[in-house]
Length: 52
Image (cartoon, rainbow, N blue to C red):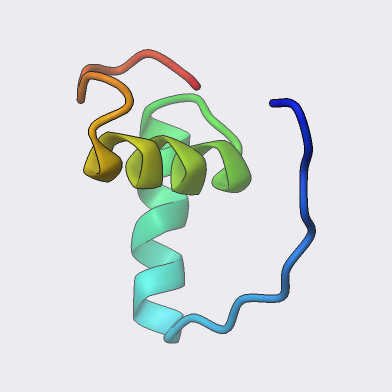
């Protein structure tokens, strides 16, 4: 990434738990999992198991 911005994000507890579980399954940090999903949704990456 060229430039990073830190944000505070509020998530429902059940969504946080689900994302955490998905991140662990993919051997990614929670931050990397969220980035991966956002980029995949935006069409920047394939939806395979590769880390961003």
